Image (tube, rainbow, N blue to C red; front, side, top):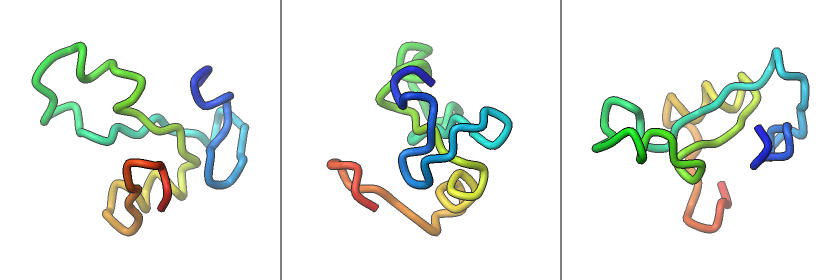
Amino acid sequence: MEYWNGSCPLSGISSHQLLKASHIIPWSHCDSDAQRLDVYNGLLLSALWDAAFDSGLITFDFDGKS
C-alpha cells in the first residue's frame, strides 16, 4: 500500500475496500518467498482493474504503461 501511495495508479481509487494487491508473477509461479513478497512483483489496483489484469485484458510494459 505504501509503495503505491494507497491508491490505484490507474483509477486513483483509494478506498481500501475497493483495492486489491495483484501479483505480476502469480504466487504459484514464484521460485521463492522473496520473489512472492517483492514489492516490484505487485500492483495495487482497484477491483475492476485487478480483474482485467488477472484476465489478461490489460497488460503493462516495463515502464508501467498499459
